[in-house]
Image 1 (cartoon, rainbow, N blue to C red):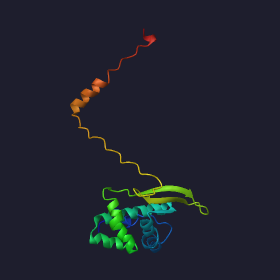
Image 2 (tube, rainbow, N blue to C red; image 1 turned 60 degrees about the horizontal axis):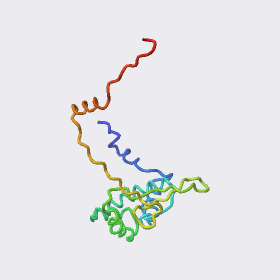
Image 3 (spheres, rainbow, N blue to C red; image 1 turned 90 degrees about the vertical axis):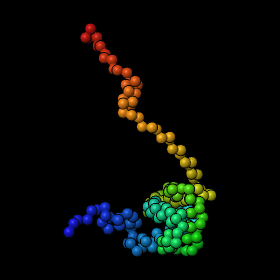
Image 4 (tube, rainbow, N blue to C red; image 1 turned 135 degrees about the horizontal axis):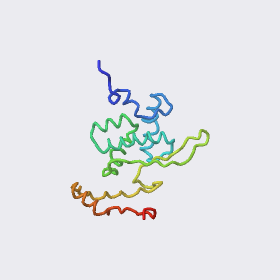
Amino acid sequence: MGSVSPITSPTAEMTNFRKLGRHAGHRISMLRQHSLLSLFLNHERIETTVTKAKEVRRLADNMIQLGKEGSLDSARRAAGFVRGDDVLHKIFTELAYRYKDRDGGYTRLLRTRIRVGDAAPMAYIEFIDRENELRQSNPATPQPPQRVPLDPWDKSRLVKQVAPPKEEKISDSEL
């Protein structure tokens, strides 16, 4: 019987999320159906703790990808994750259309304050490219033009042209 590599073991796949101090059923219920993800998709901006916002960001990006696919299978997968027909309709119409040209990075995390009582760091999570943003999106940075790779012989000749040979300094004691 061979050993299972850590990359393909089932336990390695299960550690790709934050525990959030809750048992599995409570965590899944909180993120999926009842509050955070559905509220975020519906309102497009919520304030929560930083760790919960990072987890919601990951799930929301996956929901937008499903909306952009637009197939029946992706609609059923999204319906198993969020609650409410209005939220599903919004994913597959409004949000999918808004982000059709964007490959990823649909959300932004803005840290706001430290919560009184338990000193938890709070943050706003919001969709980018929407009305009433807290901070405007930066324009896309243009990619630099691709340079043609140099032949090693040409490269060595260029290096010799740029760097002149070093001259030895003659000290006074040697004279």
